[in-house]
Length: 523
Ligand code: B12
Ligand code: SF4
Image (tube, helix red, strand yellow):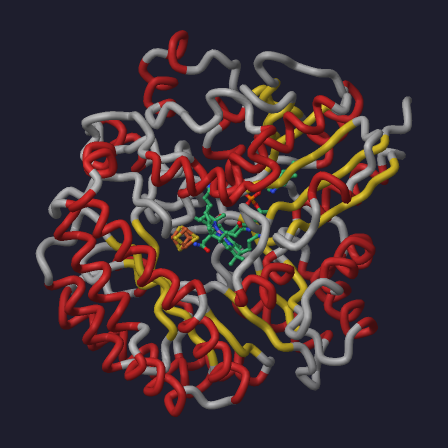
């Protein structure tokens, strides 16, 4: 077999020049799969280089010019960047492969720009691509494993790719780890609602933790498990066995329903320092926060007490909300969120605009059927820069008025000041302030205000958001041009546009909607 020169790119950001927060944190948002694929490709006998793109590197210069195969891992917000890169590498003679959330959510579109587009990816899928390694143009080949991989390489095997990425993080260094895939819950908006929960080997987890302790004095782990702590006792036993003196600090995303007081005591003892539960809405999604029968102010009080209890054990908590869900109506949901900010001043609120990421969730078919999905370019689909579902119960101006109001309230100097004494230790206090005054707080207020203003002053923006035209307003086009910088010139023609209803079309008119054969399963 031919020994291939393989480049693997992990796009953790969508454009050059990250914000202040991005400079500190982007390298800590690296994905696990590009490192995993690096290991698998080497095990297949190929020569591999992995690059985590944090916004600081020169993407056109960092990878060698003579690559045979380039894997790119991208979220949807990085899709335009990823499409430009594929064009760039193809011109240099490489075959290109896209994987990650964008490939899972928008395979029909991605196949126009990549030779291979991968869904679930295991070692066989990667081996198949390396074995064939052929251009597929104009339509790429879509491959998917039948299910999520049953095992992943050890941390020791990944370490040669982890280390150079950590070196890019100037202060806080977070090691990406994962112990489970899928989720037993079925929140209808979530990409994992249809993916079975599957723990990875706990024996391997113990070995990985011991290995990490041999490399770093006081490591920080960022757990990428979609829902951390489902097999809580097994997890804690693995952590306690390999790290009895709790040298490791942990960050995890977990649903509130798993964070009872007994669990919190054990998490605290085992060094858990930050936790990110989803609250989502005061009227929807009760099954995640164990508040199924409570809504409105009742739910605010219950969740707020719960969050304050968590803060007695875990110094940092980010509470995730989705804005614009169909269950919301009138000013009340926003006022309730402000009430929550008052009652739980120590929590850092993260707001996501309702987004339908292509095939991500079954609920997206309903939005597409109702004609509510807008064709915003992928570049803006990061839960903040655009909401691609027209709200059911608000006009756009009403919605943005409320959004600006609640964001301004959450990141006002008063709220920032109240967060400081409500947080117990120094790094979380500092993180809360930096996040609030950087792109996540002040930056979002500015951005949402701009959109609100354009709704009044720019007819092209208003018509686009009302779904009256699909001509992209100059505001968005100029922003992509500026943000992609030198890479814009490689963006293929038509790549700013996609069919927002491709998922629906593929189910109702398979011959027409998807010109690509989806789901060739590799086993
Ligand atoms: C952990 C996580 C994070 C972590 C780690 C992110 C990272 N770099 O991986 C953090 C907190 C940093 C994060 C940040 C964000 N996230 Co996030 N995150 C998740 C979460 C909970 C789990 C993803 C995961 O790692 N699963 C485990 C892996 C092994 O499985 P997998 O993702 O299914 O991947 C499989 C295949 O896709 C493939 N694959 C994956 N990567 C690659 C790469 C290559 C090269 C190849 C070939 C294959 C491949 O192999 C895997 C095995 O089959 C998901 C939700 C969920 N429940 O899945 C959201 C999710 C992925 N995040 C999402 C979003 C929107 C974001 C943010 C934009 C949020 C924000 N506003 O800041 C940022 C973007 C960060 C970025 N890098 O661009 C969306 C993505 C939607 C989309 N199409 O883009 C999801 C799906 C949640 C949602 N809203 O529905 N996230
Ligand atoms: S609990 Fe979290 S990971 Fe699980 S289905 Fe719901 S949103 Fe997705």
